[in-house]
Structure formats: C-alpha cells, structure tokens
Length: 157
Image 1 (tube, rainbow, N blue to C red):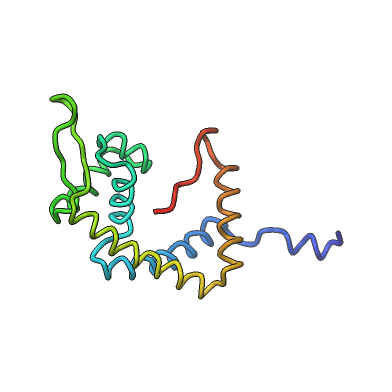
Image 2: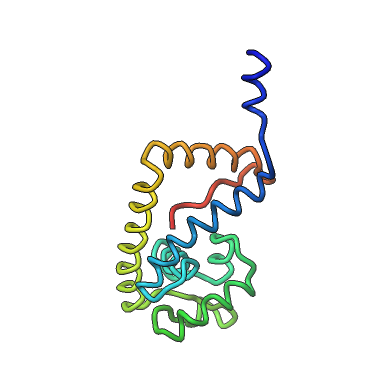
C-alpha cells in the first residue's frame, strides 16, 4: 500500500466528538418520533424491557438496562404517574416488583410504530447498506471495547 493510500486510512479528528455529533443527530430523529407518542426514548426503552421481562424486581431491571438503581427509580416515576407501569409487592415483604399495565402495553405498541418510523427514516437518509455497515462496525467496536468479557451490546429497544 502506498503512502497516499495509508494516509487516507489514518483517523482524522476526534473520534469522541464525531460519534457525539452523529449520536445527537440520530437522537433528534428518534426523539421527534417518540414525542409523537408522548414518550422519551429512555421511557420507551423501559417499557420495552418490562414487556420482555414481565414483572421484574427493580434491581434486575436496572442491571438489564445497565442503569444505576437511583436512575431507574427516577425514570420509572413518570411512567408510574401516567399509569403505564405499576409497582407492587414482591415475593416477600422486602422486595418489590414493577410491571407494565394494560395502558403501558398499549403505549408501547403505539411507540413501537413511531420507533419503526424513525428507523425507516434513518435508513432512507443514510441508505440501507450504510446503516447495515454502521451496525456491524458498532457491534465489532463494542466487543473490542468491552471491559467485561461477558458484556455484549444492548438489544434493540
């Protein structure tokens, strides 16, 4: 490989800044769609996790979402207030369970359509091949940067 070709492969600029700029633009697209369902993207992720897990102890939910327990508690509050999630007693007097309500399941279905619209718009803007390549690069990078060998990438929201 010639000197000119290898120079083209050298990263230019700050990777952190470039990734943050890309993430902000992608997040705006998803945030706008989620707002149409009355949710934030983080709230949709919580509803989706609870839909997959079923009734769950808050600690299990926090670990699944890789959140601090205090962050989970704070993020659950508006969902409980809206009637989409309920908290109740667990198997013993010291534990609690959180679960979706029927209204929460319906809200998740509505929001899932908005999420799909955002993904289709991103695919349209970037092209399917570029999005697929981006996904592959991100997945490979997550594996290479994992601090815990058992850590894997997050599932789709």
